[in-house]
Each structure stands twice: as structure tokens, then as C-alpha cells.
Length: 137
Image 1: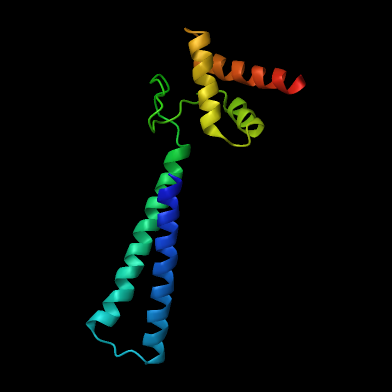
Image 2: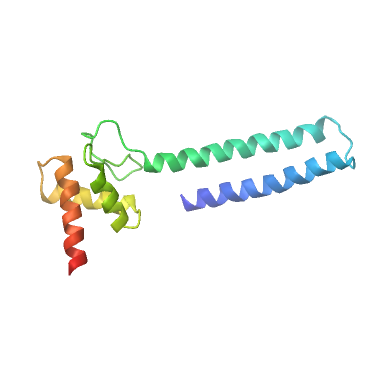
């Protein structure tokens, strides 16, 4: 994911520089406004918009919660199961973990393995209690 982000940001940066240069040259009149010189900045702008939308969609996808919390979470880019009715617990857990949702999901999955058959809220509360106990030690 970091490599993809780096490539996207580098492409956005380079496209932005080329776009700005070509646009400034067209405005100053040093480039003759032909089809290639007019379409190139527009194509670069389209590439920048598409890359930006893909990046922001990927960021939203990372923090989305599933509609049906009964589906088990898996390790391969799946949505993270969150408590349905008790979201302050989720916020407290994320605050204690400095916003690391992956670690929170792993702790919930570990609690599910250790204590099967409980409600989703119970697992989140268990993780919260464990974090508080660990912090007090």
C-alpha cells in the first residue's frame, strides 16, 4: 500500500509540475496553441483527478465499516467488523491504539478465538477492558 501511495503521489506531483508549466507557457504565449499543446494539460489534469479520486477512495475504504456485522473479518483487505450499537468503545480503543484500526481488529479477532460465541459488543468491551488493565500495570 505504501508503494502504491508513493507512486500515486509522485505521479500527481510530476503531473502537477508539467501541467503548471504547460499552462503558464500557454498563458504567456511562448507555446503556440495547437491541438497537442492544449490537450496535454487537459489530459494531465484528467490523470491527476483520477489518481486523486482513487487515493481518496482507498482511504475511505480503509476506514469503512460493513453493513452486516455478522460477516467474519478476514486478513485479506476485508472490511473491519465494528461494534454496532456501542461506538464510544470503538473510539476509546482507537484512542488508546493511536488510531490503528488494524491492531484493534486483530485484538477483536483474538478475543473471538479465545472466547467464542459472544456478541460483537462483548468482544469490543473485552478488548477495551484488556487495554485498560494493561495500561494500569
